[in-house]
Image 1 (cartoon, rainbow, N blue to C red):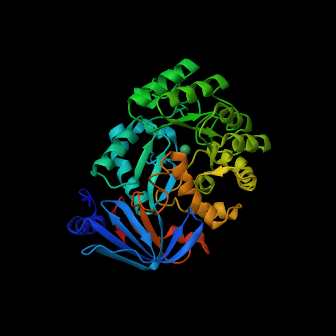
Image 2: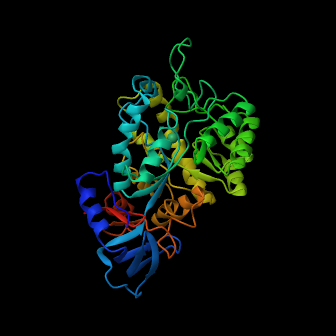
Length: 423
Ligand SMILES: [Zn+2]
């Protein structure tokens, strides 16, 4: 059992207890939600050895001397996966221009409570899709992996690959201002520059490439309906990323930008706001994931620049409608929130919006477990509570299949066999 070192009081107590206990842990689950099988099981026992699930079932052999965790009054699920987060973004700032008021070190330390809050709310894995200050996310991922910082397992993008002045750039300042290197690390204005940036990011050990095919809501002077990356740039991005074993996640609001990205072979469309019928068919044909991020609209309000609020209001109804159509059409969906817009720890509010807009609670939970794991390319390790998988386990009161909001109140969090929360 791994010891947790740098932690607050709740985690410290549990971490030390975990470190002192046997290497084998047994969880007794009153109910166990199995997203892979699409079913709820009763009275299951989970045996965990050195952070890996050894066995699961109603009557499995229980090794002597194991630490017992009684979750008989809870519904137990696999640790949740949020496929679209921004843990290094300052949630309180509301404006990318405020990046100019802070150093990268401030953003790094500022992200520590965010990472911790997201983990303790039940999200044990995140795909973190971009940091304004390049590579702060890489440093945070590594600090979490070392055990220096409490947070979810992170798969990081390193920077936003974007046209200069585009959706992923810091914009809205005078043209004679030169940004520091780490606020323009992902800028690329041709297929060649896209390849160059992806090579540079791969060399900095990123896990995924985040690229902008259309304008954005939360960027000054940016039109969400307009296209940014060209077909040639999108194709170059996919080929170059694949050369390094990386997938490409594409920010897409407008329908034409979305379709160009899908045709180029990207792994996921983020937001998918104006996804149309042809786009749905293309996504099904290519097996492209949609990562909806529905909850942001409810959080873009007071304190934001008027331009951002107006754009969000303009597109939110269509976003919900087109998500509903995508679900009905059978487009693959992976749960993602864009957290950093809404407050860290409010990730699970996305579930209720998914269910209000056409998913069953089971489908929504599948999108945040087996679906997310498949998109991240970690389906052999995570996303389900099965022998051989990493022991990421959470628990909630009540039945999330009856009321998916039960996931907004997570009471138990284990990541790789280590207990971080047990209320
Ligand atoms: Zn985002």
